[in-house]
Length: 402
Ligand SMILES: [Zn+2]
Image (cartoon, rainbow, N blue to C red; front, side, top):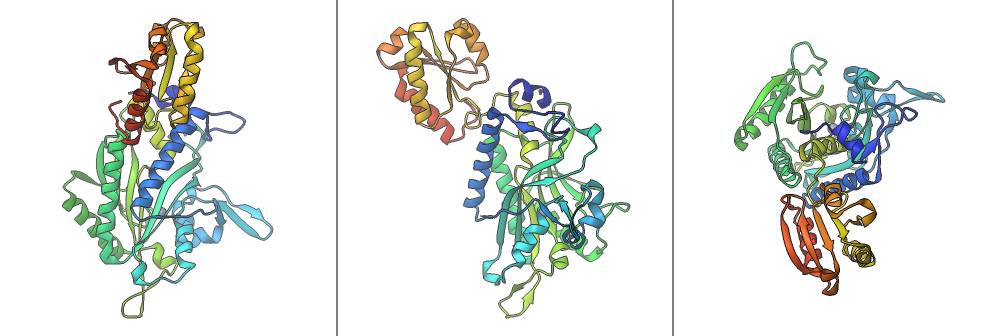
């Protein structure tokens, strides 16, 4: 595996500037394409799974995090408050409290549950500068987050559905999980003290894991302060594990925010909050994809999907036309012209681009292209329209073999 910090800079995906600050990477155009494509993918998958998307501010009053419990249990990782007039506001350490308030802003019937609220939003963590680098240790995190407000009876099915969604997303992205972890509290940590609540939540998660049949390990000391979680771990280039995806059961914040729904009996009941992230933070998942694929992203994610290689100068106008056709068909295409060297040199330059369309006089005369795939496969000259349609199909099906 590659180190994403080195490769990400070489490939022009992201960078940092000391004047912006450590742990605050910016995304260059090719990196922004990968990120945008992932964001579109996950939002679409969530819409199909019945999630509703919201936007909420990245700041909140200190009091909000006092109520949620972050202030007491998590303030070491939070930025200090900013004073504005008589108020103190902080950069949010998580999206949960905002979503709890969004839920609370309307009354809810049991008929609306499970209510799934999703947001791909920024949150902030005051990492020490010594620990920063690349996309994995950052001070601003864009999380693929969602909170499912549901009845206790619905928790199992929602956790199961989230795990299934994580599985199908890993297939599309070519990601392999290192292991599933049931993250539990330990004796010394900063956890909400409510033994019954913990027992109940543990039982719910354990039942789903046992039913799902995936091997998992229970690890103490890794729970969220408000509840246990299922973490899906991935390994980086150096074999270090980190959590990419997570599913958590929270009986604490619904109580803190006094969340309610009206049951079939007409009385008010407390919902459960299931927190879940499918691809984790955009920063971490892109870092992982860079390392896992060595920069050779699956075709649907690749910053450039088709490299057009004219054989000689005379083929360059036709190459530019072909690029425009590809772009008009929704593909990301670039011409690598003869100024970039011999054909062999240009094939090397474009080695991470999934498809190469080679264009010489013979192809040009018949509106054809010769196709090379980055793994070395060659496909003899064929109509350009067919070659374009084939790449489009591979993108549409999110094939990972191209
Ligand atoms: Zn949450």
